[in-house]
Length: 241
Image 1 (cartoon, rainbow, N blue to C red):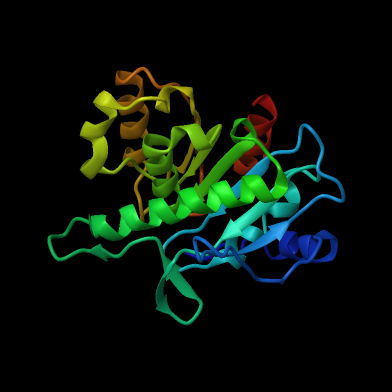
Image 2: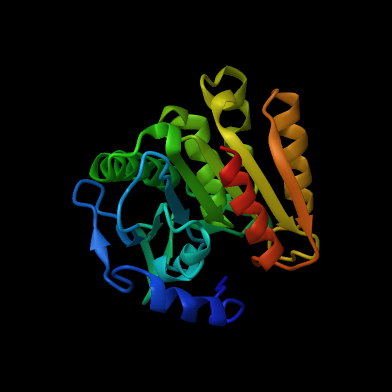
């Protein structure tokens, strides 16, 4: 789902202030295309923030938020590897024949591996350690963030889960997971979300608590979208870590 209309004015500000806006890059090893906002100088406290869009969207969508995520940080918005149509991409396909979303798990795992390579390459390029790498995903992108925390926790410091859910297909894997407990988690969801209802956030919170994984949790009066207050809370969470 696109956020462009909701953030048209913010998008305009970012257009004027972002270094190299609109220049699409490709990370050679992973093949993932991306947009990047970089500070004039990367400092010791600079973070690498990687944005992961939802199904049917593209790298331009969440990149419109980059100007709000700290002028000192490197902000990268990645394009998912699977093409659905022109300017429309996904991290994996979904099947709704049963009435419930069934994921193509092989595609999801493949996207995880590509993201792991992507993170390594960007961290090396910008000389930013894993202790300062954050994933912030929306919808399907937030599901991928959960998956990366589960399977590649050593590569990241924290994940921002915006309007997402924990995959049923991998819940059992949390029992024996190593390192995920060190990943900081931010959960945010709209109370009026009709795409991924608020129950998914509440269930995720309960599930993580049961596995002794602490998450900062927020709900907002909104639908399947991102609001200004939520973005402020994301920035506040990032500053704590």
